[in-house]
Length: 505
Ligand SMILES: Cc1cc2nc3c(=O)[nH]c(=O)nc-3n(C[C@H](O)[C@H](O)[C@H](O)COP(=O)(O)O)c2cc1C
Ligand code: SF4
Image 1 (cartoon, rainbow, N blue to C red):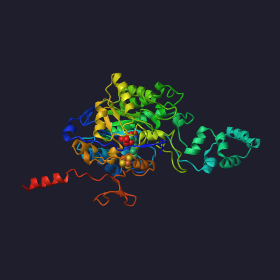
Image 2 (image 1 turned 45 degrees about the horizontal axis):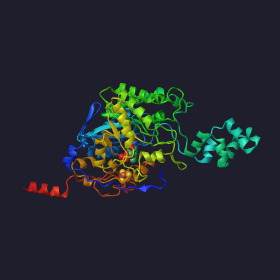
Image 3 (image 1 turned 45 degrees about the vertical axis):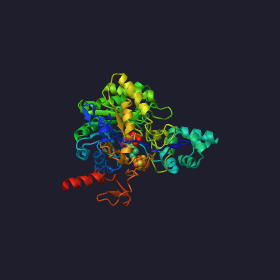
Image 4 (image 1 turned 90 degrees about the vertical axis):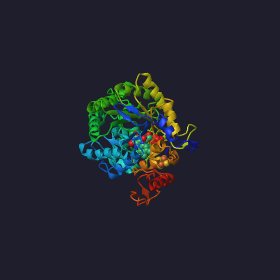
């Protein structure tokens, strides 16, 4: 994980939790319209991949339990993890690229409805991603993966001042490069080849020489539209188009996108495909269905998009008719750390990854709500353009006072709590009942994120080794980690005594 040079360790902010009466009066617990639906409160659990689907992308009992546990806390909106729109293998990540995924997704919807007593609206985040391969062994790369060209031979001859390389046997060239110094390799390989060697092969949206990348604008609108139709059929309240972080659609929005086919370069061109995807989705699901997006307030990478781009995109998404805009930050491949041989590059290991999921080891600003100024700027622009599209903020939102201030100060319309909800899925109901003192406070040190990076079932370190003997607790790692937060005893001992006494009378 990327770190600041001289990080400051920030304390988890102390706070006074509201009474039930204060919570009832608050803006956070007022309903809000999101397109055609109304959420019971302005609280939101953003998408979090828990690594619980089957290897074929089907919903498992563990997925159902994961979402049930969040629903028991009754956030206003719960967003299901990034779910693949294509019918291609993608490991244990949920998929929605074929009708065979519908029964499991329907069950997921029913589980959340039941557990929240219909109080939590359920959206699903739908995603497309390009191919990312593991970092290869050096020998394998030079023996099998590098496509050897005349250019390589020419540079090699020049660098070594040995013209025999121009006509040398291919195996000899490959063998030489396998053991060559970094200096020679850096001269012989181009930037993309070096990236493949050091980080693993990865497709970029700008790879116009690849037919499958060139044709993305032709195929993605229909693929997303079919996925959204399935989401509606499964009973979700809406879809979230994943236009954030390191994935295909964010690649189109990125300032690094210089495609020459009308889908890259200027902002107008970069937003073209995201708007075409939205139009196809809207056409498929109709106007009486929620369609929103998650996109970046700042990519936090050299040459990437910044706030001015986000402001432009936000206004255009609102103008197009999106029902909500959820802002995130960073999470890119471009500044990710080099993975170990045999592992895939993870887009949350550089500074942009830090900004996506900030920890308490921070700069002066600290990790709490550090993206809020970006969100507020997008909201101001969207509102000034005449749109009331609700805007969701996330990133280090942990206390009621903080969430309420963000809303009352008009910086966002909805408060998103991801890791805090993972640490304590009952945050929402505890605050509402005036029982905030019982909240398990996230300490923002990213144990959960490390599990995500390792593609292991995501849990929270505050509860995954506690009460392991609780009846019904499902565990992994030979019984050492429980998969779900312990059940909250809603009645305190005092209340229990009172109710027993009442019953006895
Ligand atoms: C384990 C884990 C998985 C995540 N998966 C997703 C995802 O599928 N889609 C997404 O947009 N963001 C994902 N995120 C980012 C969160 O939605 C959120 O933006 C981020 O954690 C910052 O908010 P927080 O400070 O409230 O945690 C994930 C975060 C974590 C910790
Ligand atoms: S593992 Fe750490 S950062 Fe993640 S939710 Fe739990 S306390 Fe928060």
